[in-house]
Length: 240
Ligand SMILES: Nc1ncnc2c1ncn2[C@@H]1O[C@H](COP(=O)(O)OP(=O)(O)O)[C@@H](O)[C@H]1O
Ligand SMILES: [Mg+2]
Image 1: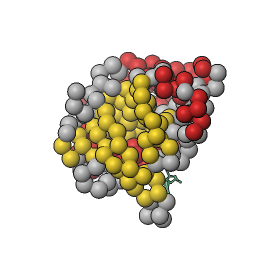
Image 2 (image 1 turned 60 degrees about the horizontal axis):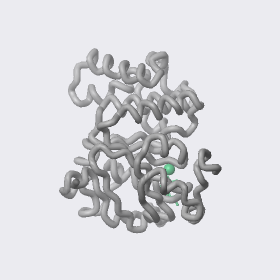
Image 3 (image 1 turned 45 degrees about the vertical axis):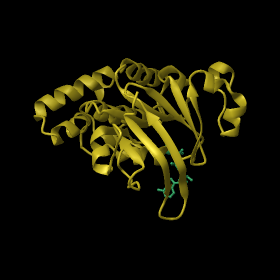
Image 4 (image 1 turned 90 degrees about the vertical axis):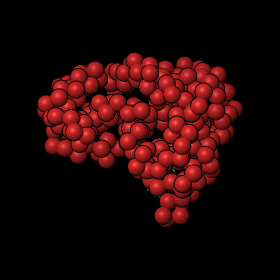
């Protein structure tokens, strides 16, 4: 099957000179749930920012449905949940924030807010609807940011450490919500290998800006030597 989203040989250095990606290639097929795992600093967030059109990539490195895609096209097709929810939550109230993307797309405010409320409910976060985002806890902010992207129903959903700062129940809700999205194409950057096992059927391991290994789950995460070489530990369920 042809790729929905593809990266070929992507290299990127930050303006200060820090090399973050050193030739990453990967592809996602429609409907796949793929984990992008790697130690801190391996390049996960930088790669996701490129996929979502938030950093300018050289032409000819990113492809949607087989065609070269620039930042504008990527921004429309790819929904990114940022690693830091504060980068995403901009409106004075959670419901308004979660509905913002739909309103910007021309959906009437009442309808946009009703849809946003449904998504908040599905995340067990409807009680946050009237709250100002900057007064929420880290985990609550993450749920609010997640709602604002899920409601947009992007063609590809990329999530950067979505369970960081979540308590066990909220973590479980995020996992269930992602699992319920059978049709969605997901790329999940995380060092929570147990969550990756619960949500994904394939994983890509990033190591020092390169895709060091790739393969089906759970097998890939049983390879202790490989994980160790890439600065990772076995998932808890395999004794890590
Ligand atoms: N805004 C930035 N400016 C300079 N260097 C950065 C910036 N963001 C990340 N880096 C560097 O790029 C590399 C990859 O970082 P990142 O993509 O955030 O990795 P990960 O998400 O896997 O932890 C690291 O060496 C990091 O220090
Ligand atoms: Mg990161």
